[in-house]
Length: 422
Image 1 (cartoon, helix red, strand yellow):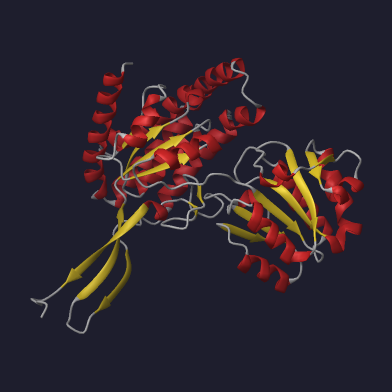
Image 2 (cartoon, helix red, strand yellow; image 1 turned 30 degrees about the vertical axis):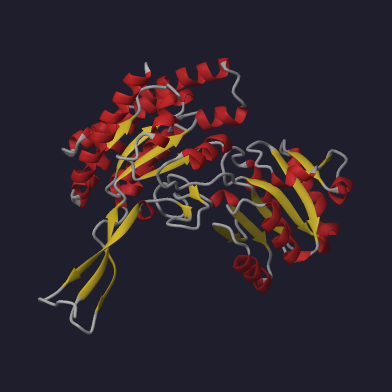
């Protein structure tokens, strides 16, 4: 596709999205929910088609020698298809944020003021690997009254197209414009550049979801506001007052449940006061489960299989079965380590000491902080949001899981009775 053809395509998509956004912003809850229900049903009924499309994507990905972590992100199976459908149904069941009054008050002069939730407008979402993002992003934008232009990764193009067709079936069932949810139909990488710099007339916000290189590029080159996070360097701190069986379960789950997601733990911090009882079993569990442990000198003494950690390891988001481990002098040292090396994504403390837990929760400045729970709960679905577009580590507009409510803005509605300003 030539540059002029690509430009014309993206311009048409942008104009169509703006027209659809105007319709969708005024669509009622019942109409949006009807579209979501039909889309969820289509995903269930077209499971065989989705699996066939995904099998073709996986075959091409293996031929390109993609890593095991990327293949896991790309994979669809019956369980994940059911989860996609269920996620759309959960979004459907959420309260409609559009038109809700967040605050209201009356001024001494009689003016009545309301702060009312409204859609952001047209959202551009650029993502890699995970085809389920097509369903999550499409459903969240629809429920929140936003039109969306989706640009998935080339490795998941067949899967994303099959899922997108299910979303279109939902829109048709509800008599909503198909351009409410558009999928860029080309794998040409220039399309990403066009979304970043050439669509300021149409896009109100961009959301990147993918690897560090993609997110960094979007944050650096985008000409419209961006919601996203660069890395998920997540930490588990095991305190001196941690229950050992609980700590073992949480550490193993936080690292190994799914190593390729942004909520996977990448660093284990262990209180020096409990290394005699906790260090060796925690390290052994990880290594026996197939995880490479890179540790400081004290951690290396716990198990001969531990490899030496470098300074870079404390900064690294592995997205693989690798974890860095360090002994620290109590909760304050753990907080200091996270502040220096972390990415402000998700951190958890394991302890039975309520005061220590509160100190950690209050002083760690990350988007998500947990007590006695796995970092893998850093997920909009687990937060009751139905789904998420991603985890934001920004401090403006949205922070943490980006769900329906986070995809809205607000306007002030002021009602008077003839007042004029003196």
